[in-house]
Length: 543
Image (cartoon, rainbow, N blue to C red; front, top):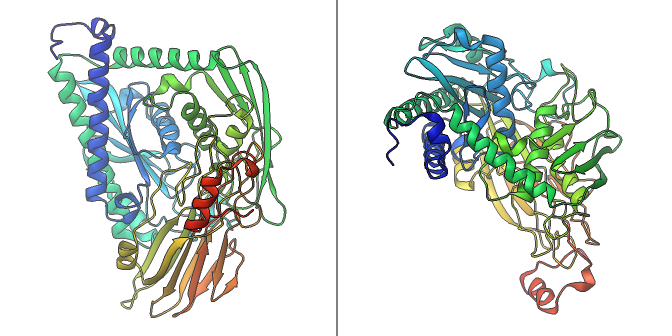
């Protein structure tokens, strides 16, 4: 589309050009995502999709993200960019710079995710930022666990600093990193994969601006933000003003943990206040505010404007509050390694509160958070290794249909295929099947969890940590629906305390039973045809 010799203001006022320009930016981030999948050294990016890439304007405001982005990363990555701007100042930034950090409070919430930020220049002028974050296979310290007591146990902490200066890598940083992790080739290889992605995005943006003879993109970004903000405010205005509360308990440790929210709708704004939730814990299950805010915004955006691509404008009418020192806004240096075991509950709580407003759009509680299995051991040649595998439970039912079985939600992380998992780890998978009867009863049935069986075929012991939730408190139903089935972790037929590390000896068998999702509506309202189908397929609910 020809837009040469037109000013930025003229381009920003043209809705057709805005759509074309935004579409091209989305194609850039999707290309960068495919690059990471092709070039990453670990399966966490190539198979599990545990990464994201984002383009922001020159102020660090989110403009475009790859279509398969993790919801939490979409909300946290722009904050990482803004932290880099505040720390370094734009005057000191050069085209060959790439910044790095895994600080939980300015990153994604735990040390395992490494974030990169690259300033993008066009015509010698800073015009945007390209950013990426990805879960690396190991970051040192104790294996990722909810059993840690402070941040210092959880691994190698990279403060916000330059990874590349004028295109030259900081070899001291890379040497320290390689020395402190169990998987130096994979961890550093994955970081270089991210470097390639942000470099690609910077080059593509420079090319696009040159093609359209535009000096920058801030005015275009502002126009997109304003239009998206107007759409979100219009969607909020359609809701009745009021205060809507919800609370639920989760597994916790010795005591249950409480999640509590008050959703306040006033005119064209929504605020979500988590006051009353459990206090900060002396275990690695705390969730930093940025992650809490990201998951809150995700839930509201998915309800009100599911088809509109994410950007800064959508988030402006939404405010998120959580008391400092609470489970959902801990003070440094709180342990946060298992923050997904907390943060993944946030959308369920928000949707529970909004059931009173949008009963036909919300879903019941899911059989999540995502389950994570961490394995580490020693190869026959004496070198250490580490492997991370993901497992999903069932989704909650909605007013219109049954919950999806074995589906990641609210994150969209994929389980590693059995063939890849066996290639990358000394595990032999005996079975992987749906758990009959694990979906919550209701007019619409909750999604089923799964049963996974595998054997340790390693020549020696494997240190293993399972991050598993909903083994004590099931996924709640909604609108009269029943709860989902509980999960369980068994070793050699004996259920274990999944909060504690364990050691798998050669030949030990592990059985993982992931939880089912909650049901929607009363079970006696389920149709005869649906009941018959449940019985035929072995999907019968717990009721």
